[in-house]
Length: 144
Image 1: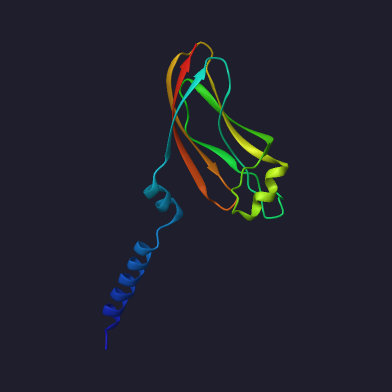
Image 2 (image 1 turned 180 degrees about the vertical axis):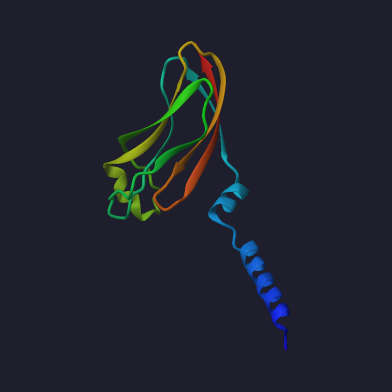
C-alpha cells in the first residue's frame, strides 16, 4: 500500500506524463513549423498573400477566418479584407459542390510603404473559427 506522500507523488507523475503525451494545438503547430513564403511585389501596388474560407457541406459559411499579424512588416502594411471567390475543394471532398458558386472569403493583403524598394519580412496567421491556425513567414522583395 502506498503512503499518502507516495500516492501524491505518483498522481503528479501521472499528470506530467499525460501533459507530455498530449501536446496542445500551439505545440503541434510549432512542431510542424510555419510555411515560408518568398514573394515579389511592385512598389505602390497591393499584393494578395493568401485567402481563406470556411464552408460546411451545404456551402454555408462558418465564422469568417481572421488575419492576425504576428510580426509586422517594417516597410509596408498587411491588411484583412472580405471578398467573394470560388472555392477549390478537391474531387474527393464532399464540399466540392461549393466550387460552382462564389463564397465570402478572408484575404490577407500586403502593400509596401510608398517609395520603399528592397526586402521586407513579416509573419501573419490565418485563424479559423475552430482555432486552427496557419502561420506564414514572408520575405517580400519590393521592386519599383
